[in-house]
Length: 264
Image (cartoon, rainbow, N blue to C red; front, side, top):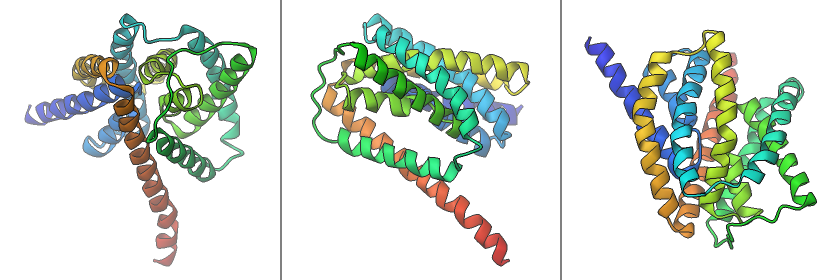
């Protein structure tokens, strides 16, 4: 009983962290849940991914509602990004056998660092996008790229979608986060169904993570809609740099492992 209780408390703690990330930054929260399930609870990687996605879906829905009630979602952008991301996920599956994961990871780290550094500086965010034919093309292209990269690296698209909307299209941070969540939810839902059919989801663990994650997500998104743009961009920039540093460290460790094994 004590082990089960400790397990539940750990899952609830991960839920709080994932919920805050989802609400405050428009992310799914998998970057906290997956490592936590694998290292703290020794869960198999495939099961951890499937369980995380189930929790991410419910947590993202909670964040989404808050942004929606504050009218911080641009449905036009959601439509074109979603069209691109669906196509991108299919392209990503094929590219996975062509492009090395190391090359892709290094490129992604460069994008995160570039976006993070740019967001440290003042950005003129009008909060409104003018949707013309050229913008539609760009949104679809961006959606394809985000869908492909997110699928190949197993990360949430919000890490790329939010800074792209803020830096390139000068969308307000709150609107970018709400729009990003609206794109994430359908993908998380379909992925959760597929994982459930393949028995790659621990529904009990996902439910426990979601129980605290939903409350934290509502609180986080409430804070995000009231946060000034400069502070929001600064915090997101810090998050991007942190994630890039962590990915670089993991990449160095994975590259060093074969050399160590070969020397022994």
